[in-house]
Image (cartoon, rainbow, N blue to C red; front, side, top):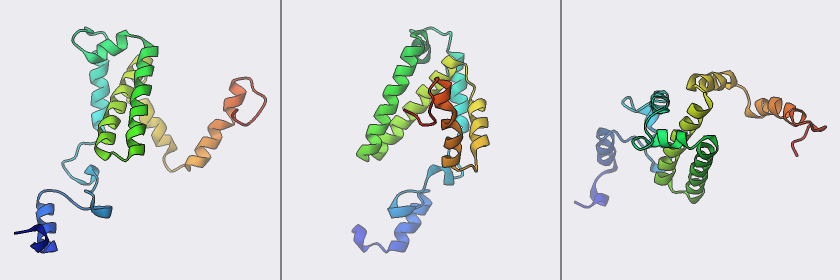
Length: 157
């Protein structure tokens, strides 16, 4: 039987049985709406793994290898992954964007481990900002930035 011959209700029931819920424009709903979906706690676990490999053997652990190369290389690699993520976003390549986003988050964890930043510190900052307009929050940061660099202006050059 051709797909066009199958009633739409039957197709919708089949998709629902497979756990696919349609969102806008027929795309699958986000994973966060599924009860069995992974949560942000995976980032805490990822950070713990990277932290545990900080002093590990660079020949056996990619995280140890990155961290052994030093802060500049760690930051450079994070930047490279961020650029790749942006390229996929602009290209509209959803699958590649998801994969590159995971790479960005992993390399962000490596940056945090190198800098001694715990995820809880970032979660606390996000919590502090929650419910605050992004425009208002940014305005509080921008005013002090030029002065911190000894510039006599309230505008970022």
